[in-house]
Structure formats: C-alpha cells, structure tokens
Length: 316
Image (tube, rainbow, N blue to C red; front, side):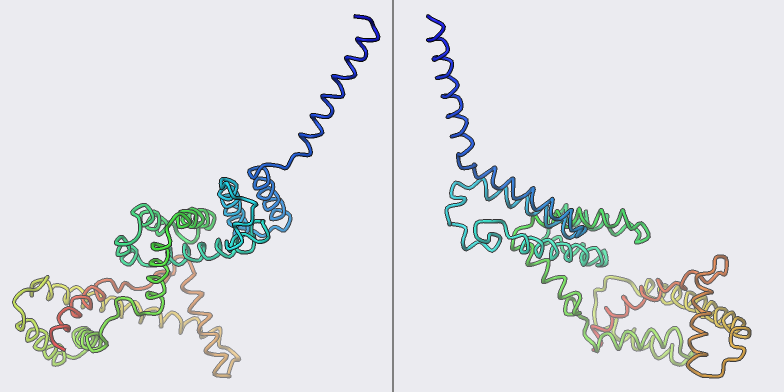
C-alpha cells in the first residue's frame, strides 16, 4: 500500500471514530443517569443552603426516590404525573422534605412517650421499632449528639413502615397526646385519689373511713390481682414515703426563707418578692451539695393509687 493510500485510510478511521463519539455524547442519558444527577443536585443545593438535619433527611429520601423512579421502565414518559413526589418529570424536593419532617416529628413524639405506652404498641409496630424506641429512652437529654443521632436512626426506620403501620402509629400518638387513649373514668379517679388522700394526709378517722370503704369494695368481688396484705403493705410504704416527702419539703421551704432574708432586702413589691423567691428556690435546686437537687420520691404513692383505682372500679 502506498503512502497516500495509508494516509487516506488513517483519515477515514479517524473520521469514523469522531462520528461515533459525537453520536454517543449526543445520545439521551439513561433514566438512572438522570435520576442520579438530580439526587446529586439535591444534595449539593442542600449543603449550600445549610438546611441542617431536616434537609439531610429530605436528601436521603430524594436519593431513594430517584433510584425508585429510575428503576421503572416508564420513567420520563409522563406516567408519573399523578405522583405527588414528582413535578414536571423531576423529583419534588419540597414534598420529600415535608415527608422527612413528618417522620422526624413522629420519631420525636415516639421517643417522648413512657415505656409502658411504647410497649403497648407491639400489637401494630414491628419489634425492632419498639426496641429502638426503648433504647432511645435510656439516652439522657444531656447527651444531645447521641440523642439526635438515635432520633435520626428511628426516623429512618419509621420510613420503612407501610401505610397501615404509619397511620396506626400517628393515631396512637395523637390519642395519647390528647388524653383520649386509655382514659380513666373520672369517677374512678376521684374516688381513688380521695381514698389515697384520706389514708396518707387525713386524720385517723379519715383513714379508718377510707379503709372501711376499700374493704367493702374488696368484698364485692372474689378474685383480685392482689391480696389485702399487699394493699395494706402498699398503704404502709406510701405513708412512710409521704412523711419523708413532707419533711423534705419543710426543710426546703425553710432554706428558701433563709435565702430570702438577704435577697428580699429593699424589695416591697409583692410580684417582685414572688419572682425573687422563685429565683432562690431554683438556685437551691441547682446548687451542688444543697441536698435539694432531687425531687422527693412519689413512687410508693403512685403505686398505691394504681391499686386503689382497681378497687374503685368495683365501687363506683
């Protein structure tokens, strides 16, 4: 082959390669590449704005949603027009942020519930969600970073719940917050509270009258979840605890009075005196070694009230 023919052949190969590269670059990108590009743009814009935790949660949802959209064979053909998470063929970042914020709020509310109420949710929540919530209850609020990290982990887990589980959880939390879940009969509550006050704070005659009413209610039923001996032991324990509590309260008031002897000098206005007294009380509670940094215990008193509620249900 002559040199001229070799040069012509080389030019033909070069032209073929250039035309192939141009067609490849001009080709329409695949759904995966479009979705991935959107998720990257979402993440970059969020970092520029510095929206914090809620935006990061929305970005995570955005990346997951982009991947879901890209996996569909009809992506980009107009079939997603009814999807609230898609707007004009693009992932709706605002909708994703609202969903992430709602799930974060659910996680915050769930972590704020008592253990007993969280345990009752096993009937409609997966076991790992309940265990994750109970683990979060063991983290003190002082460990803000650890608590926020656990809060985010729970929010991500709640994202995997189906619609039925999520709706049941939201309804249960709303009922608890509004006081309509497991509500106690007001007559039962008033009767039980009255008995406890008569037993712990009333005179001897009041205590005897309360015992007679309680024993009369106990006689109305043959089977109870506790014995009379257990009930009377609870009364004795609560009485001892209440005496200690009243003594601690009296000591605290005396200490506040001593503080007010100096702090109230020159103050005559009643409102200012009340504010100064509140300041002195808070200072004593926060002062290390004062002995007033912990609230007096009411555990035994609450346990007694729980038993008296059961008895009151048979009395009213």
